[in-house]
Image 1 (cartoon, rainbow, N blue to C red):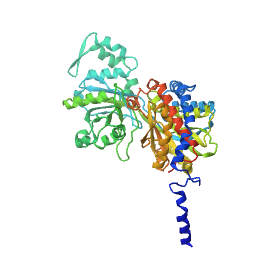
Image 2 (cartoon, rainbow, N blue to C red; image 1 turned 180 degrees about the horizontal axis):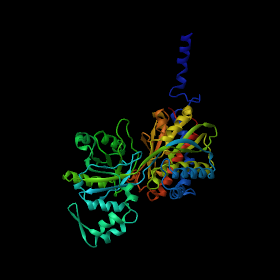
Image 3 (cartoon, helix red, strand yellow; image 1 turned 60 degrees about the vertical axis):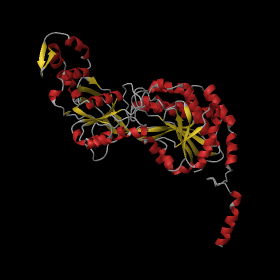
Length: 538
């Protein structure tokens, strides 16, 4: 009997040569037929492009983002600003008449940087621009001084104390220019200044501001150098002056810098910002402690300050820094992933997901990272709705929460929905800016890639047809690891890391014309995949 079945199966195969079984039980067409099907979307693709780039929707994603960013501001995980942003978007998506607008609850980290202050005390007084890194601890409440007291200028310390008060800095210049002088620690100081600092300032009220770490720095350019000089690191502040190579390669100093410094006995770490260009601006980000390794405070400093301290150290100059950080970690907070849909006409259970993350860091406006990605994803649904289109599959928008802490909201979304993983056609995320688009990055099988490459030809009217290897997106990685095809916007990121995680991430970075093009790419690709007769092969 089994041989009869085998003979039947062998005779059955030739009529389906070059074809594969689809997941819905139907037999797909040849690739030539798929190319013809995709070509049939050229008029719809043109209508999307015209509406997004030239029509009534021109600049809409930019204008929506501008109102949002200016109204809400930065949106750190666990913050009231993020709560306000989620409420804002929930209402906006409802007002846009999208379907199934709802919030899915998750838990996210809640960390606040608190007061931060750093100053180089030796060889001269210099204010250091810092941004504490996410999850960093504060400087110890009891303080720490490892530098030799006689090596620290007394006047430098007093002026630094003045700088920490709210009402004293305006008096310093007149005090310095007046009256008698006092000998202290071998140096000559204006008497009225000493009198003011020791008697007029309510020291009790500012004492809590004075506690911090005062220590000599050890400047290194790599983890290897740190390990070679481990004996020099004990009791010091490790300053990393690593060169920027690529973000993925260089960011390890931000994420691991404190741990590696603590392993060799350092009391704090200051990390050169992960930036390809700088105008004395520190760039923040998340960092990770390691079980069994002492936790030390850590912050990013500007490229300029890192290089300056490196030059000083190479010249044999002793560098002493005072660091004060008031960071605090609270219990996890309640938050939400924000969801809206255009429900599919034929296969509503099958999902094409477009996304960006709604949270940001607590500096700048989070307009670039990732306001732009979130708002072109919203725009994709708006454009489809405005054109009266309804794809066969559900087009789902997800605005993630807690991405900056490692995709926290997305992971919980994945855990909640992975039971339906076979119904996820493709997952798309835009999280590397919305500058001039160059094409689409894709992760999936060769067969799926060929289909997406063909879809990109529909964007020839705006000359954005390239497809690149390997989609990138913290929030969609969970799905791609399990075999779901993934896509991310590929745009010109030559200036992205100039502003990334810094005070410079504002609406000034955004360009309405570039966002129009990004929205057109995002909409054409997501709509066509959602409307094709068959899901992308896996």
